[in-house]
Amino acid sequence: MSANGVCRSMILAGLLIGAAIGLADDASAQRMSSNEARGTQLSGRWRGAPGLVTRGPDGKVIFLFGEVQPSVVCSPLQVCDVELQAGEVVRDVLVGDTVRWKVEPATSGAVGGQAIHLIVKPAEPNLVTSMVVTTSKRTYHIQLKSHLTQYMARVAFEYPDENGSRWSDINARMEASVVPGANVPAEQLNFEYQLSGNASWRPTRVYSDGQKTYIQFPSSMAGQDAPVLFAISGGENRIVNYRMKGSMMIVDYHIDRAVLISGVGWWWQEKVSIWRGG
Image (cartoon, rainbow, N blue to C red; front, side, top):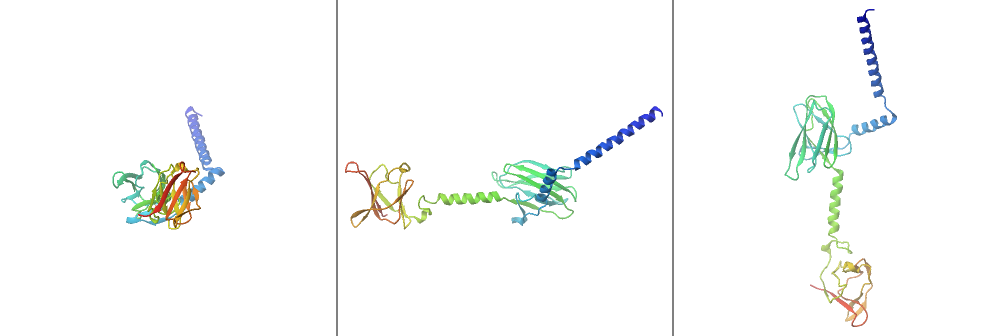
């Protein structure tokens, strides 16, 4: 065999060996371990689950964020408007097929509360790819599909975590309007009590819910001995039962006139009078 023939044979053998190695590598890449198979199965269920889709204002298609991977259908010569939550700052937009899919930014709303819009445009129908959007609040995983004629003009999201935060804010505001001890809103209480007398423990306020009377002492009183409470009725003082809750004295009935006394003897006694009136 000539030298040229030997060279051609060696080149052909090398090509065949390379092709065989490539096929072996492809086969090895397609084989998956049990964990890999389980992982792709779970991911496939998440990506393929239908999830909740509802109609929002102005024709928006609303997806529940985080429930499944939303699939947004777009069409050539049309635009899909994917609206994010107002105040979110977009950090990265990653698209699997950057050649046939274009994603451009837009904004709406006043400065300080602007919403970012992702304007999605496919080059042709029958395409499928994925898009990952990272923002200052969360990460969106979205599947993009292109159809010849059908498309979603406007897409937005409902955020379950934000709903929980709104309820927490409402509850916090309601709790802030509730007066300690009485556990009812302030507008349902009677604060028309007056005090006279000086004492180191002089109450900061007295109020009633119509059934109980609440005497609020300075916070320094917590854990200390409280003065004795006398209700004034018919010109006589009678000791009243009460219970202390921190720096709050709670009397289990409504009182009109009373006196608080601490200390023994004329010189060591401290007294504060309480009466209801405008």
